[in-house]
Image (cartoon, rainbow, N blue to C red; front, side, top):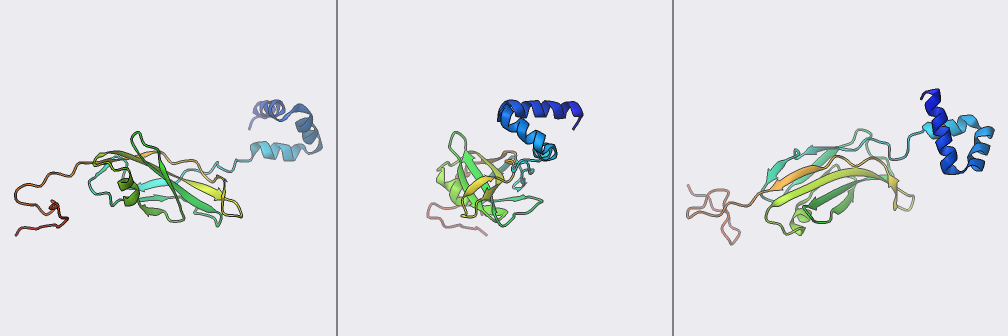
Length: 172
Protein backbone atom coordinates (compact mmCIF):
# COMPACT_ATOMS: atom_id res chain seq x y z
CA UNK A 1 0.00 0.00 0.00
CA UNK A 2 1.50 3.36 -1.01
CA UNK A 3 1.86 6.19 1.48
CA UNK A 4 -0.84 8.20 -0.33
CA UNK A 5 -3.27 5.25 -0.28
CA UNK A 6 -2.55 4.73 3.39
CA UNK A 7 -3.25 8.37 4.17
CA UNK A 8 -6.52 8.22 2.18
CA UNK A 9 -7.51 5.03 4.03
CA UNK A 10 -6.84 6.73 7.39
CA UNK A 11 -8.88 9.78 6.35
CA UNK A 12 -11.72 7.49 5.24
CA UNK A 13 -11.63 5.59 8.53
CA UNK A 14 -11.71 8.89 10.45
CA UNK A 15 -14.81 9.94 8.55
CA UNK A 16 -16.56 6.58 9.09
CA UNK A 17 -15.56 5.61 12.62
CA UNK A 18 -15.68 9.05 14.18
CA UNK A 19 -12.78 11.40 14.49
CA UNK A 20 -12.30 11.28 18.25
CA UNK A 21 -12.25 7.50 18.74
CA UNK A 22 -10.17 6.63 15.69
CA UNK A 23 -7.66 9.44 16.10
CA UNK A 24 -7.16 8.53 19.77
CA UNK A 25 -6.59 4.87 18.88
CA UNK A 26 -4.23 5.83 16.06
CA UNK A 27 -2.13 8.06 18.29
CA UNK A 28 -1.88 5.37 21.01
CA UNK A 29 -1.09 2.40 18.76
CA UNK A 30 -0.56 3.40 15.12
CA UNK A 31 0.85 -0.01 14.15
CA UNK A 32 -2.24 -1.88 15.37
CA UNK A 33 -4.60 0.53 13.60
CA UNK A 34 -2.66 0.20 10.34
CA UNK A 35 -2.67 -3.60 10.65
CA UNK A 36 -6.45 -3.54 11.15
CA UNK A 37 -6.90 -1.41 8.03
CA UNK A 38 -4.79 -3.80 5.93
CA UNK A 39 -6.14 -7.07 7.41
CA UNK A 40 -8.45 -9.07 5.16
CA UNK A 41 -12.07 -9.37 6.22
CA UNK A 42 -13.57 -12.70 7.31
CA UNK A 43 -15.21 -13.22 3.90
CA UNK A 44 -12.14 -12.36 1.83
CA UNK A 45 -11.47 -16.04 1.03
CA UNK A 46 -11.92 -17.02 -2.59
CA UNK A 47 -15.16 -18.76 -3.47
CA UNK A 48 -15.45 -22.53 -3.84
CA UNK A 49 -15.06 -23.68 -7.45
CA UNK A 50 -17.98 -25.56 -9.07
CA UNK A 51 -16.64 -28.77 -10.67
CA UNK A 52 -19.57 -30.76 -12.01
CA UNK A 53 -21.77 -30.81 -13.85
CA UNK A 54 -20.16 -28.34 -16.21
CA UNK A 55 -21.77 -24.93 -16.56
CA UNK A 56 -24.45 -25.08 -19.25
CA UNK A 57 -24.98 -28.84 -18.93
CA UNK A 58 -28.28 -30.37 -19.98
CA UNK A 59 -30.23 -33.06 -18.15
CA UNK A 60 -33.54 -34.92 -18.31
CA UNK A 61 -33.77 -36.81 -15.02
CA UNK A 62 -33.37 -34.82 -11.82
CA UNK A 63 -30.86 -37.24 -10.28
CA UNK A 64 -28.00 -34.74 -10.39
CA UNK A 65 -24.94 -34.60 -8.16
CA UNK A 66 -23.40 -31.14 -7.77
CA UNK A 67 -19.71 -31.05 -6.84
CA UNK A 68 -17.23 -28.30 -6.02
CA UNK A 69 -13.79 -27.83 -4.50
CA UNK A 70 -12.38 -25.32 -2.05
CA UNK A 71 -8.62 -25.30 -1.58
CA UNK A 72 -8.46 -24.21 2.07
CA UNK A 73 -10.83 -27.02 3.13
CA UNK A 74 -13.43 -26.56 5.84
CA UNK A 75 -12.47 -25.66 9.40
CA UNK A 76 -14.40 -27.18 12.32
CA UNK A 77 -16.69 -24.15 12.48
CA UNK A 78 -17.51 -24.00 8.75
CA UNK A 79 -20.07 -25.48 6.37
CA UNK A 80 -20.75 -25.15 2.66
CA UNK A 81 -23.89 -23.22 1.74
CA UNK A 82 -25.38 -24.46 -1.54
CA UNK A 83 -28.09 -22.46 -3.31
CA UNK A 84 -30.23 -23.95 -6.06
CA UNK A 85 -33.03 -22.14 -7.86
CA UNK A 86 -35.12 -22.22 -11.00
CA UNK A 87 -35.87 -19.29 -13.26
CA UNK A 88 -38.14 -16.79 -11.52
CA UNK A 89 -38.27 -18.88 -8.34
CA UNK A 90 -36.67 -18.20 -4.94
CA UNK A 91 -33.57 -20.23 -4.13
CA UNK A 92 -33.42 -23.18 -1.76
CA UNK A 93 -30.33 -23.37 0.43
CA UNK A 94 -28.65 -26.42 1.94
CA UNK A 95 -25.78 -26.31 4.45
CA UNK A 96 -23.46 -29.31 4.35
CA UNK A 97 -19.94 -30.43 5.16
CA UNK A 98 -19.81 -32.47 1.94
CA UNK A 99 -18.44 -31.08 -1.32
CA UNK A 100 -20.86 -33.28 -3.34
CA UNK A 101 -24.62 -33.09 -2.93
CA UNK A 102 -27.48 -34.84 -4.72
CA UNK A 103 -30.08 -32.22 -5.62
CA UNK A 104 -32.80 -34.51 -6.99
CA UNK A 105 -35.30 -33.54 -4.28
CA UNK A 106 -34.57 -29.85 -4.69
CA UNK A 107 -34.90 -29.98 -8.49
CA UNK A 108 -38.16 -31.96 -8.20
CA UNK A 109 -39.55 -29.54 -5.60
CA UNK A 110 -39.76 -26.83 -8.27
CA UNK A 111 -42.22 -29.05 -10.25
CA UNK A 112 -40.80 -28.02 -13.62
CA UNK A 113 -40.74 -30.53 -16.47
CA UNK A 114 -38.14 -28.37 -18.24
CA UNK A 115 -36.34 -25.07 -17.82
CA UNK A 116 -33.21 -23.42 -16.50
CA UNK A 117 -31.80 -24.10 -13.06
CA UNK A 118 -28.96 -22.28 -11.36
CA UNK A 119 -26.60 -23.02 -8.48
CA UNK A 120 -23.77 -21.49 -6.51
CA UNK A 121 -21.85 -22.35 -3.36
CA UNK A 122 -20.13 -20.47 -0.55
CA UNK A 123 -18.66 -21.16 2.88
CA UNK A 124 -20.33 -19.97 6.09
CA UNK A 125 -18.66 -19.55 9.47
CA UNK A 126 -20.60 -20.81 12.47
CA UNK A 127 -20.67 -19.51 16.02
CA UNK A 128 -19.80 -21.75 18.99
CA UNK A 129 -23.56 -22.54 19.21
CA UNK A 130 -23.60 -23.76 15.60
CA UNK A 131 -25.49 -20.74 14.23
CA UNK A 132 -24.57 -18.51 11.31
CA UNK A 133 -21.83 -16.03 12.26
CA UNK A 134 -20.58 -14.64 8.96
CA UNK A 135 -19.41 -15.61 5.49
CA UNK A 136 -16.25 -17.70 5.21
CA UNK A 137 -15.90 -17.04 1.49
CA UNK A 138 -17.41 -15.19 -1.41
CA UNK A 139 -20.21 -16.86 -3.39
CA UNK A 140 -19.05 -18.85 -6.40
CA UNK A 141 -20.01 -17.77 -9.88
CA UNK A 142 -23.50 -18.88 -10.82
CA UNK A 143 -23.58 -22.14 -12.77
CA UNK A 144 -26.49 -22.94 -15.07
CA UNK A 145 -28.19 -26.23 -15.88
CA UNK A 146 -30.86 -26.80 -18.53
CA UNK A 147 -33.57 -29.40 -17.94
CA UNK A 148 -34.84 -30.78 -21.25
CA UNK A 149 -38.23 -32.32 -21.92
CA UNK A 150 -38.35 -36.08 -21.83
CA UNK A 151 -38.95 -37.32 -25.38
CA UNK A 152 -42.41 -38.82 -25.85
CA UNK A 153 -42.67 -42.62 -26.05
CA UNK A 154 -42.96 -44.03 -29.51
CA UNK A 155 -44.99 -47.07 -30.42
CA UNK A 156 -41.97 -49.29 -29.85
CA UNK A 157 -40.25 -48.20 -26.61
CA UNK A 158 -36.55 -47.40 -26.77
CA UNK A 159 -34.19 -48.25 -23.89
CA UNK A 160 -34.48 -44.66 -22.59
CA UNK A 161 -38.27 -44.40 -22.96
CA UNK A 162 -40.34 -45.29 -19.91
CA UNK A 163 -43.87 -46.58 -20.04
CA UNK A 164 -46.36 -44.60 -17.92
CA UNK A 165 -46.32 -47.27 -15.21
CA UNK A 166 -42.67 -46.51 -14.55
CA UNK A 167 -41.42 -49.75 -16.10
CA UNK A 168 -38.44 -49.54 -18.42
CA UNK A 169 -38.65 -51.81 -21.43
CA UNK A 170 -35.81 -52.93 -23.65
CA UNK A 171 -36.65 -54.58 -26.98
CA UNK A 172 -34.24 -57.11 -28.32
